[in-house]
Length: 323
Image (tube, rainbow, N blue to C red; front, side, top):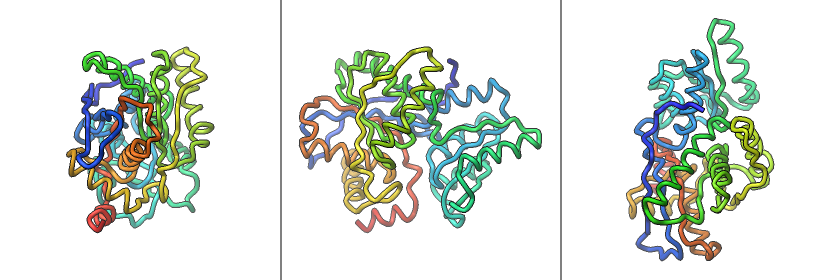
């Protein structure tokens, strides 16, 4: 399968240690928050495959969806601008959302932003209707699923897993556990798939920021794995994955004071930026699992930092500063 070269890869791996936390295992971060400036984060690995498909098929317009402050929407808008493709974003939220953070960058990149509420119907149907309207006007449109999370997009994280295997040899280390955020589950699916193709030796852990572990394991993840099987001709059916849903907290994009306090401590002691929606909750979960001795058998843990720095809103910043 062909892909574009948009991301700065391979991304580096760094060991971290907070001064006030004596961790019982070695914790490392793979810096996928450094895949690029505008493209920073995990989404661009998926978009390398998806936009290659778009170029191969002569696509003039891409359509995707997400929350108002979607990192995926921002990365899609910037990639489309770079490639000369029109971008349409169907974003769920309030129509009076402030033009800040990712939403500002969406518009700066020239994306056509469509903010919808519950009364406007299901977002996937809105995208289908938009596609029909565009094609009626002569466009050749393609829908990219939320998060870029389908079989083709998730191949970007099979690449990432193979990158990790190469870096293990270079660093003379073996990671027994690889952890990532579980949202739309495309990154998780790619890591799970890569692990199984390599023999399934690592524990792959997804920390959910949205759904229950049952939803991820039974509804979100399997269709992506099935699509990857169709694309590759492999038959990955039984796979080693653990989903933790204990750190969703107040819900998607909602933060508790203790999470904000953790983010403050982490960033001020490491210089690595976390965001309150995804990586902040996931790293909070990792530290909780380690310090509560739930992962006493683990030795070398690798967290895939999926970015998110551009997603900080004024409201979230004020909440952090009031901690």
